[in-house]
Image 1: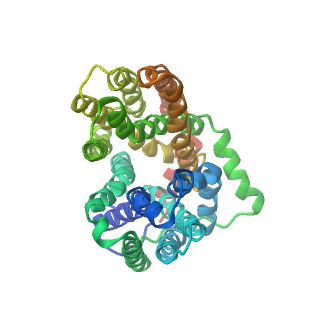
Image 2 (image 1 turned 45 degrees about the horizontal axis):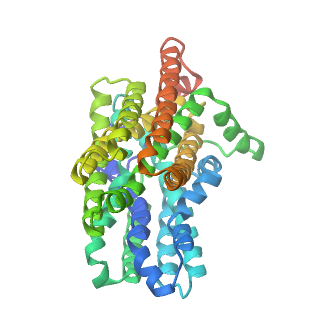
Length: 416
């Protein structure tokens, strides 16, 4: 059943899949850059540093302005932000496809990055408004799989890249994003927008989210999760090739399979939350698993297939966390209008983790070797576990003392 007060423009289930699919189209822009970098470097003569900047453009934007972008999305309007963001992705792809130099390509990636956040930030709030409260945890958990699913779509295109060329891949992504923008223009759900607020309220919403203990704990947990999963995802190919002598091709296939298991974990989170698994437990279990698995992954005792298997289990268990975190956002937000800002905080924490995790692990391993990796990975996992336990304390109190956010959400759902 669709939530009261929403004007659907297409069947309910199709609206859900349209929104989730839009997120996957946005996330595919990250995977597109990852698989295209070798060809781009060869054509433009880029160094690893600049190539890394091109790949990490989205993370850079998110790390600098995640929560502010969430507030801006609320001010612009959820539906307008979603459609405009998809159009920006299409435009950025066209600019990138015709880029004559690395500077033009970087500008294209910035345009894509703005579009990426314009798409992914309003979707959780739209989903929370068009579905019944009893189904929100499940749908939010399924939504959280958009990132690995979108990246995996581009990894599957990898074997064809030499035949089609990276510029044609950019053009194909522009066509898909443009088509998706047209569909969204006609069929994206219409939701009641909050009245436009003054600039003072505009920035005050971000401050309220940043000072909310529940939101902060969710942010810390997402930061720790992102540190763990991205450091492992990016370290695995290098670990397999340098420490185990695996060929680059085999390491790439194993790494892709490991990432696929992560997607399964995201989707499984929805079923577990629906079955009654507490949100805090869905967050705590992955971090406990990360702490233990790090010794098996980096210890050197397992063969390459064994390392990949444990890494797959770790990322699969890790997939439980983001679904629970996204499911918590509508409840944790100080008000319904603050949901995009709360999602922005999570996105900002995620992007900070994308930087901090791989960099910290890389520096540590460069000085101490792969065998020393657990001494930095395991304590980071324990920080995430502590955040999960803190979230448990907040959620326990919220069951006995309804938050202002929950009261406002109920009031909004009760409107005719």
